[in-house]
Amino acid sequence: MHHRSTSAPQTKLAPSPFDGPTGDLTLRSSDGVDFCCFSQILVAASSVFADMVAIGDTNSDPTSSSSTSNRPVVPVSEDSKTLNALLRFIYPIQKESQPRSLEDIAPLLQASLKYMMDFPASVLKEELLVVRADPPNT
Image 1 (tube, one colour):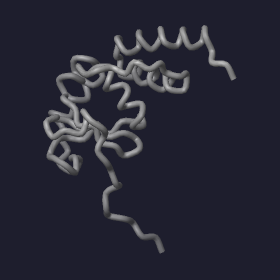
Image 2 (cartoon, helix red, strand yellow; image 1 turned 60 degrees about the vertical axis):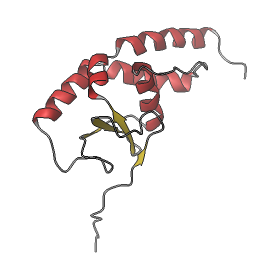
Image 3 (cartoon, one colour; image 1 turned 90 degrees about the vertical axis):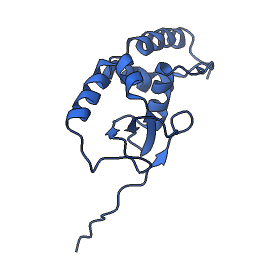
Image 4 (spheres, one colour; image 1 turned 135 degrees about the horizontal axis):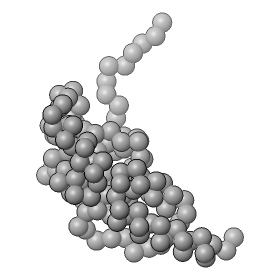
């Protein structure tokens, strides 16, 4: 006998600044972390997000809303670590100054290319060249 769970999967809020109540859209990572975002920042940074927001505005799904608000939820395939780093590229907030490893750069570069984000992609390509030219001593 199969029992189907009717409860929604557990989600949690992303770290600051993506945990605030003021965003108008929630991006949900593949590992169930909700990022409260401003759609206009996403639209300005990415034509892919611009299309997602436009489609979401015309085809809103009342069953797909964040547990903390009535804002629409857009599930994405990236995990929370990658999504957090990608959003920090495009938000007007303090940027991380520590160098990234190849393991951090690869999924982040893939996501920036997927969402057609030119600025993060160009920075990450430069970082990738530096990491490849100067591999860590093992």
